[in-house]
Length: 287
Image 1 (tube, rainbow, N blue to C red):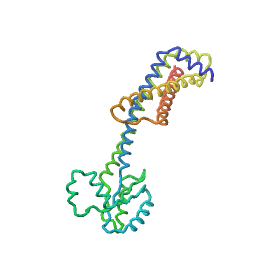
Image 2: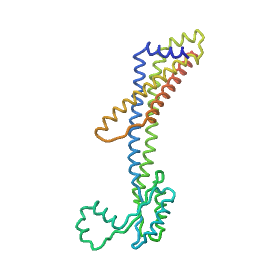
Image 3: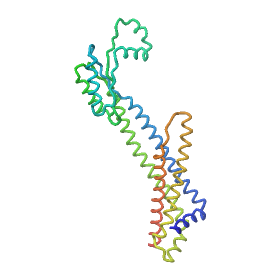
Image 4: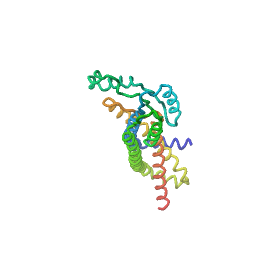
């Protein structure tokens, strides 16, 4: 193992420019992947923020006893997928309308009596805010005898569902395309490293070195360059995030997500090295 580590370190000393080029290439390839990841992350956060506002409002018939509403609130909160159920009185609804719709202030002042009914506002738990589940709960709320009308913005909820589906598909396709492009770029760079040391490989084979012994330093070399490239990519992504964040508030990767990008770079470096060395060894053996 010491010999493998020593050979890996020597490869950086023998060809510092090529090693720096390999790390830089991996870093920029992962930087592009990371940028797309940041865009996808912020789109998902924005959709989740909108999704959190999904609620069902059941408007109550006038004269519904408070005791009946209290019992109903307990039943509603016990329903699967319901996060909370809140009773809003007629006066509270009017106060909200005065606050939110100030342009109708003169109309409110001329009111002889409050025209707005009391209501129950139902918020759904995370994972239960899709159009199907929300519609099911709304239909169930409508079955209460005191529920005069139930609304939840069906079209709005369905649009959120469609946007989430589109974002997931587009994210998968573009992410896969960037990953394939990164593998090709990194593989080409590692191939240059292997060709640079082709004479050394030939000598090692002449003295009886096995393919496994020859591969190990290259594999470790690919892993080290992948780690360095991944760390550099995180730094570049953070610089881009800091610049954009001054104009528009955005979110950055958490520690786990940043580690995934570094691990992705490590895996790419390892696979690219393994493929390049295997091809070269097959070519040498065939020759």
